[in-house]
Amino acid sequence: MTPVPGLLDEVNAPVGAISVRRQVSLAAAGLRLVWQSARGEFVKVVLCALALGVGGGLQVLLTSRIVGAMVGPAGPVGFGADVVAFLLALVVITAAIRFVSTMQGERERLVGELVARTSQARIMEVAARTRLETFESSSFYDRLQRATVTAEIRPVQLASGILGGISALTAAVGVAVGLILINPLLGALVLLSAVPLWIAISRANRALYAFNYRMTHTDRARAYVTELMVDKESAAEVRAFNLTRFLRDRFDAYYDIRLREVRRVMRRRVRASLVGGAASAAVIAAVVVLTGALAQRGAMSVADAGAAFVAVALLSQRLGTLADQALRLHESTLFLEDLVTFVEPQRARLARLPVASPPGGFDRIELRGVRFRYPNAERDALVDVNLTIDRGEVVALVGENGSGKTTLAKVIAGLYRPTGGTITWDSVDLTDATAAASRECVALAMQDYVRYRFTAGENIALGRPDAGADAARIRRAAALARADAFIEALPDGYDTQLGTQFLGGWELSGGQWQRLALARAFFREAALVILDEPSASLDARAERILFDDIRSLCAGRTVVLISHRFANVRSADRIHVLAGGRIIESGTHDELMRLDGHYAELFSLQAAGYQESDRWNSLQRR
Image 1 (cartoon, rainbow, N blue to C red):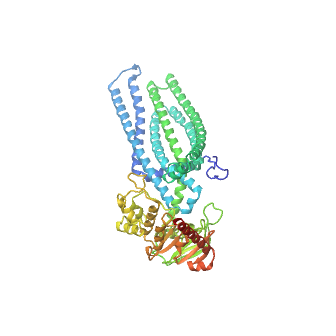
Image 2 (cartoon, rainbow, N blue to C red):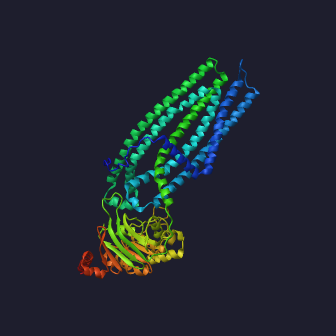
Image 3 (cartoon, rainbow, N blue to C red):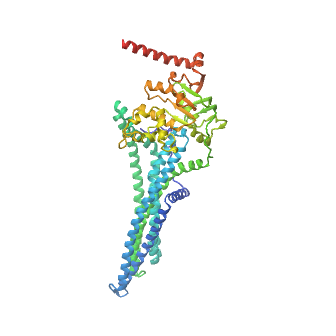
């Protein structure tokens, strides 16, 4: 189960050290994200951090005063009024620090949730507005996967690292100032002990980031196998073909790859942490020895030495906490690279797009020399397509599987942008901006329609969500799609939750789901209606009724109809036959039959099949 060399070059590209300048830039981006997401809470946490820093410094100074008051030049003097006052002040400050620390921790958690919401919303916004053909690229999915995982986990870690780092830093500075006031050399040496910790953190995090970068594609493949095993849509076929063992073996193989890498990365991170921790501990030990030596030689008073020992212990603890927070911050900063590089350029590009007003309709749609190629494909899916669609026409697209019918429909709808040629609506070129506006005039019922696990009424109203839950309009669309009868028979009618994945959910048949998809298209009340195999899940009688009613159902609208059953499109105003991504024949049914070409051949083959089936059924009845 090892990746094919050269196939996943981008996914398995080596990850080197990110420059200090880039790290600073990413940290700044992370700070902006936190500020934009939770400004008020962020300020409160910073104030708490400053209070903790001041409190730490006061603890050191009070400790020095207490020891100095208890140990005079001639020896111990016991507890005087000043000692009691200093002790009470130390107790109050320590209790206050504990309270502020707890409040700060809870605020940090809230900030993390707010940042996570903002990050995930931006990912969804970019994904929803990205060109549809981009989703055909595996490298896009890898980037989307890393950004999505980053948005789910790292914002909390980022907020915690930034806020915890600020808190730990201010606390460390407060204690360091107290120690420096006692002895500058000791303060400088304790601060120096943080250097090996930072080097270890940097090495450990680069190893972890490189690991997750390499694992993106494998993890996505493993997630897909998991989905096949647990998803309702695939459950029947998995059991029918007894695929459980095969899928489990594939799952284990992918996880074995991950676990091998986890062990290797773990060893590298543990080694880095061991070396950095040992070096830092050695510096702290040297500071303790030096403090004792200075006190022994009389270079420091006993009170100052005692306070210095306390300060060293506190500062060492604070620096350890600071190192942990720096670990979180540095780790999340590396992963923020995925989020920033995926989201920010796309958001900037989308923000620059001009906004076009939706047209009220159209008189003519023209395609001239249109070509389209999917990302990473070796040849065009559409080749030199010339097509005209006039308002009010019923236009059919027919052809064998893979001929380009659905791709052409998506190009007409503005979902795919052509890689060559032009598309115009009433002589206006379809650009990114005008395509988005024109889609307001398009309703689609695709063969790969979505089964929304919402209520039956919501499934229909999603055809035009900005129209609101207009009950009369929903019922009218349901009636046009002949879905009203089975919806009204549901336990709660139009308010019935669909999908057994949710509490009280009700499951529909394939044909009923397809009727909901049709109702959704009718609810949109668009000028152009595209029906892509709209009867694939319907029975023969329902299919015949649907195609017989197309003109009345879509009265006053333009219809693009896609079907592999040629008998269903006989009444279309024009029929375009596709093969190999090209339009090879066009005309009415009668014209195409007289042409005696590809359409006539396929129509005759299908008709012969139906006639043979009818004769067989007749013999069976005899």
